[in-house]
Length: 279
Image 1 (cartoon, helix red, strand yellow):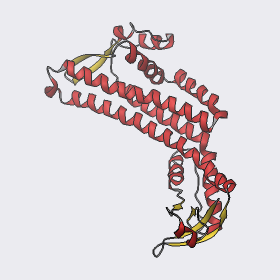
Image 2: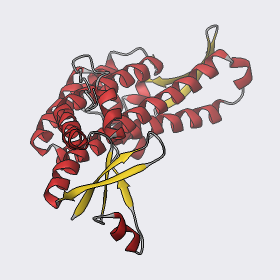
Image 3: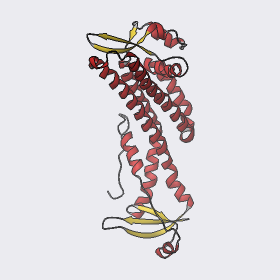
Image 4: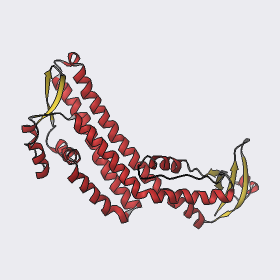
């Protein structure tokens, strides 16, 4: 059993002990908040993919635009470019795996729908299926960035079609590669995959948006009763609190749910208005 507290921090900190708060009430409040861990995984992993993609893109562009600085360094450049590519692809496939795990925990009823969406992206977008398969190829067979070229436009790190076709791709990806020029520029693919990951992340947000709203409403119900910020204590009064060996007051924060709502509102089809109890 906990005690519900009102916490007023306008002029210093004032705490008022209000009433007992049952375990059932506490679970009704905190249970919906667990969806925030799904949201955090979604956004953080998406951002890691995009950061790693940007690092690879910046590296390749720097080489292209500063060719004089990189002459005679072909081997080192290919090693670094493939290292950055591996980071990019590892974060991409980890993003997918982590989201599948979060569906199992929080939205198991929609897990199969997410797996169908993953397959739809694979079927619809070349970069999605190309890089998803390339992750396995880098891990078990070879590195795909295998050649440098110097021309009037700069210094390029490229993939070679005949080398790629030696790898064990799914048939649909092999057919894609067969349509390429002999020398393949990876830069546009990086940008396109980052955009696809962004929209997949948005699709995932749409699946749990009602859970985020439910979490905020659970908080708002208690905040309306308290008429302000609140928290909890194991003690029922100041006197009991002072007698505890380790007296502790637990403020209840909604900041992570607020942040999740702000993130969701970036989605073009989601608009959640937060109405605070004091309005």
